[in-house]
Image (cartoon, rainbow, N blue to C red):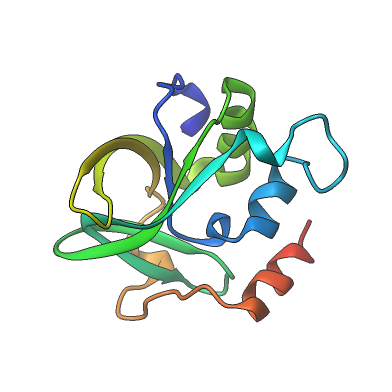
Length: 146
């Protein structure tokens, strides 16, 4: 359960719907005029996580990440998150994920300590052989669920 994990202050590695600015800011209520300013966050694109595979969750518009030694996932690092932000994100991710510490590589090969949400609900809910890809249609459909 992600809500039991204390926030380390490390950046957050995202690999699914939160890679979309629209979804990220919607989740944090920035698009609704909340006091949080977009400028407080820094997003670093093209970051890689080795040893994990991104999979499509059956009948859902979002992905999961599971351990897979030979695979890697490209995603985005988000800097500037507060403890309050992480609480919102923990609630958003729900009980299907656990926030864990990892090491990612930037485009220059530098290793960066981060946190991310690892799938814990079981592989029976996943289409293991189908990678999830970010596209505008999925994001627009996903935003309709709010």
